[in-house]
Image (cartoon, rainbow over all chains, first blue to last red; front, side):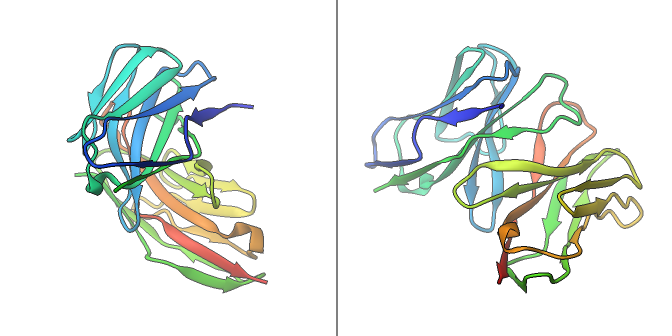
Length: 114
Length: 113
């Protein structure tokens, strides 16, 4: 059974803290993605990676960075958390090839910044 | 640019009712179209997809037909169950290369017994 796991289901952090969200996939997929999900806005792409050590900005990269040191792991970093980063964060992966391939999602991390 | 518009929810239906969730898109070229479903407490999972005009995707009793002339991909099910209660996302992958998928805002469905 294919799997994308995320390090935490719920996380509460204070403003200004550095926050790490971890994602691991066991499907040997090349592509990995980080989205945030907000009511009424759907999913918005923050960053994606199509290979180890490679990263591309998505639609809303400001305030975030990413790291991909190993193929199976893709980390999202909030350098200095702010209250407007309170959201649901979803990680996904897909095989190389792009078109027609579905994305496989983790269960999400609900982050609250106080 | 590329975008997806789907009907606002929530949609509330009784069990065995007919379901339609509207989805229209704007895209250059010939996008692939998807419906994803998110059950409570879970991540999204692919429900069905269509990769070219007039294709019909189907799964678990749900269907959607890729209509290029109306740029639509409406989701339908003939008889919903309580277990279909979830959030449904329409999405497209544009024919512009790269790996980006554009998601709609999502439509929450409640099915009452």
